[in-house]
Length: 312
Image (spheres, rainbow, N blue to C red):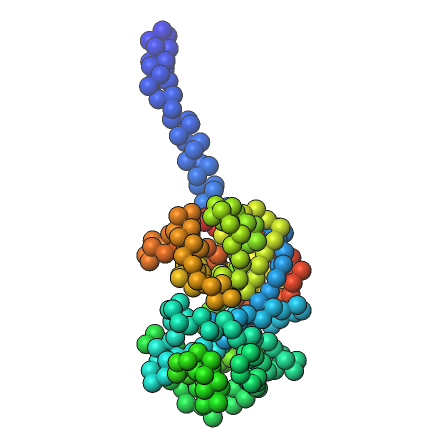
């Protein structure tokens, strides 16, 4: 009998870890089987504080105070128009010196948001009727080097901006190919840009001065969450819309220019110093773009509900 006890003791001493390994394996298998059915609990993580659209890329935004349509490509009219150099399909690089005059143009939406009004202290007002763009068949489609499609808004509109800028440019719009009801007339080329107000406060503290939110051109300014928490959202609900994380926002030299046309290097210098960088471009990251998963409308005061988190 003592021989059996000695053998059993020897086996237990050598393989004491076997039951624990088996238990770990069982738990692993259970986790694999059940994880597809386990969902992150939806929870309110913030609120839409401010809402902006940019009818013409590179110009001032328009602040939206009520419900605004979110189509399959982005907010209605947001960045649907842009400036191309005269005689080419190269988009105007508004980061270049000498283009600060663009910030002297004030932009607003009038007549129940069907027209864009451009004003400048040295030029008569210009009104762009957005309903004209519904007749896309009246326009010739062009492509830029990246394959984006554009149509020329018109000679009068291009000349007005060229006179302000002191350089010949063409005002173009992006035609929407597949209209969904009345969701979009002009196609936005960018998804929804979101930045947390607390994130800007944290960055300003690191930079040592109050950096203006306008430098970063968000569509949505969110509040009610910790700094940079907005950078961990994978899927969110706002109003009746659903948005999904698309990519982090790489920052460029335009952040060095405020809406008064004053240019300094402080913003970009501090972004490079205090913010993580894109592995591919090495540019600093600040803010996030979200693609549209479900269309609808968004307004200031809407709650932001987190559906799924991601690893920032």
